[in-house]
Image 1 (cartoon, rainbow, N blue to C red):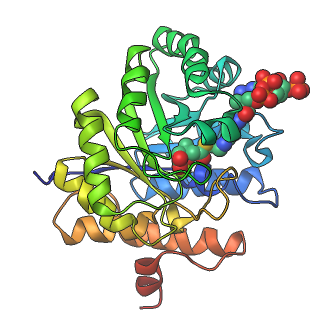
Image 2 (image 1 turned 90 degrees about the horizontal axis):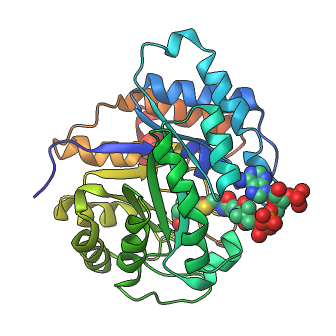
Image 3 (image 1 turned 120 degrees about the vertical axis):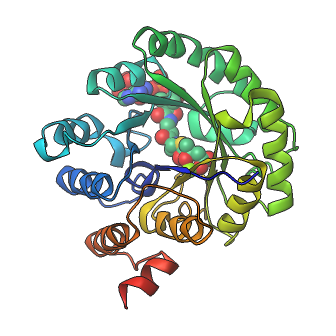
Length: 303
Ligand code: HMG
Ligand code: MG
């Protein structure tokens, strides 16, 4: 069932940077996005239109997207930009900024939903209903992110079926793609197969994406487990940047470079240039003062 081609949604500029305490200049974010596009990224999560009081680092989303649109050299690339939108206000800002995809986000755990978006799961779905209508009216592809599908930092164990139940409720209001997230990187391969299979039964695995954080070093194994079910869209973050402000101790997403190394090694196409990704990963890590977090990136960089 292995796919022959996989699409990577690059979430570094959003998930990778949102947790950085020191403000990062808009120009650096734009440059990062530009380099990722030049390396072949076609789906790019560039911003989060959330409350700047909650996540100050994401306050300049409008300017990041404007900076990218103003760059003539990027005109020839076909890129679908996405942004997180927690409510109508966020959706309106995302439309104004000209995104092609919007992401509403909730969780498979009540405790996490309360900490992250200050409401219950049911309230979040109601809040997303008008957001979905607006997305439809503007022909914007709507994704729904489901955090803590493999476990919750506050509640602990999350039942296998929980993500599937939330996916169904998101589908009811018009969500078209389902980002199943291991927010704290706690899942292991067998559980991943079970959770993804359950979600796939409800909404179809061709509309499911895997979003794995690598806190416990399980992300690549978990991606392989999902690949074997036929999942062909994954999220990753350049240099493995990131963490979640509402998930203490969570590290970044799996590094884009490492996923590409895995996929190319298995003969699966990505359309990505690993060497360009590696120079981008090394550059952004140095620029924000982090050790370079991709294992294959470090190996290739020092060669
Ligand atoms: P709230 O305080 O309950 O709601 O926040 P509110 O409506 O009272 O808003 C509070 C203030 O924020 C108000 O300003 C609003 O205007 C403003 P004030 O009147 O006090 O001056 N506000 C906004 N400003 C800009 N854009 C907006 C917006 N909405 C309200 N869209 C809310 C509720 C949902 C807004 C808040 O909790 C929030 O923004 N949460 C976002 C948290 C977040 O971004 N978390 C990280 C992303 S999720 C993630 O990383 C997980 C993921 O990667 C998958 C995984 O790994 O699990 C996707
Ligand atoms: Mg995440």
